[in-house]
Length: 184
Image 1: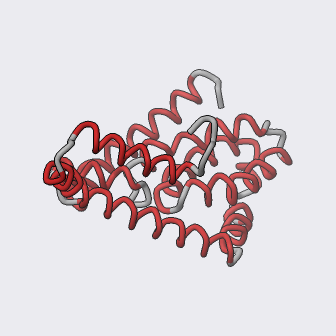
Image 2: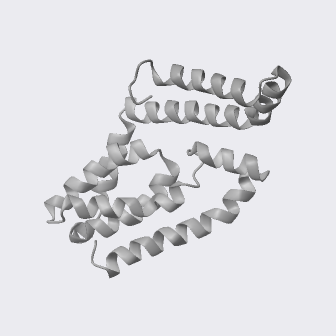
């Protein structure tokens, strides 16, 4: 994979076939291993494709740019010097409801530009933008969550109801720590 002799998906398939053959030399054992993981593979694959389509629609139609402009246009001028805090607070719900690509490549540059206009360094805006990641990692847009709930045999809705409040609280603690330690 590192040498890139072949495309990575082809190398992965060859490696998976080799690993199955070596570790499970009998065909029924190989079928059992594939069947044991098929549900997670299908869930994650479907989620990756759906998230890619959603991200493509948001970016391809220009909606991310319009959302970013609208968002910055509705931030009061008095909050300009506090754009790092504003960015951190906004990152919590926005990274949950949109892909990281949409937020970090669409909205964050506009927030950083607005912050620089008020004397807030872009590095502070970047640091603050990461505060929402604890909540983002429980988002329905993260394929690993589907693997987690599938392996734990938990309904996605039950997982979300339990995790979201703790993840949001963790994100707020991260943001508060950034303010307390002068990082933001």
